[in-house]
Image (cartoon, rainbow, N blue to C red; front, side, top):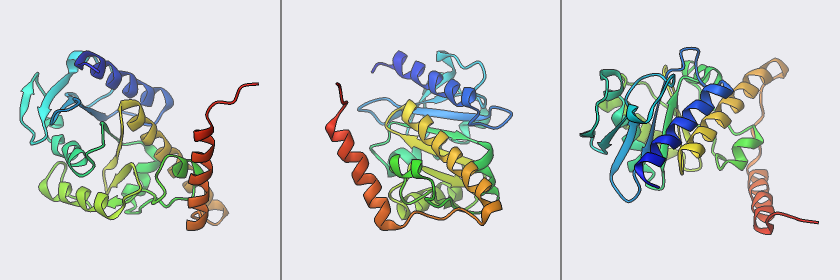
Length: 225
């Protein structure tokens, strides 16, 4: 995929999150995509998903050096927040950060999100969503905490940033946006379940069974009469 297509994929995925409401009221967020076979990323250079255009993405390397374009101060702060995911999870193709309403409630309460919602299982987040302890936005402390959360929780596609928001990732922009949405849904369901005694995590043996069943049907492919 060339850079023009990558830029458009980011815009489409950011617009999807706004459309489905998986962002905060301000539509604050930032999105990045890795340029294939390089150590560079395209990162949204503004702090809102509103009115994104292809030229609003800057090209940077994974050490934070600006290669092409321009980036505002607020988003320059978070370059390493994105870069650490690509470094720790080399298979990652895209990263998105939002302040989505329900998931951010968990982050503000300093709580990780357990795997009680089947959609997390089917999206390869069987370990739930870990909490990265707070550090000032984009600081070395915050980056270290994100890396620690990723290393301690292998089967996940997102991290809750304490007192901040959500960081989700996937193979491409659409997958990263989908991960953000699934985490937001799971958080919403868990909060609603509190009035009934709280969400219950799926037992480990049933997590494996659910993944196995998904994979079995995926291997069979589309059925036609």
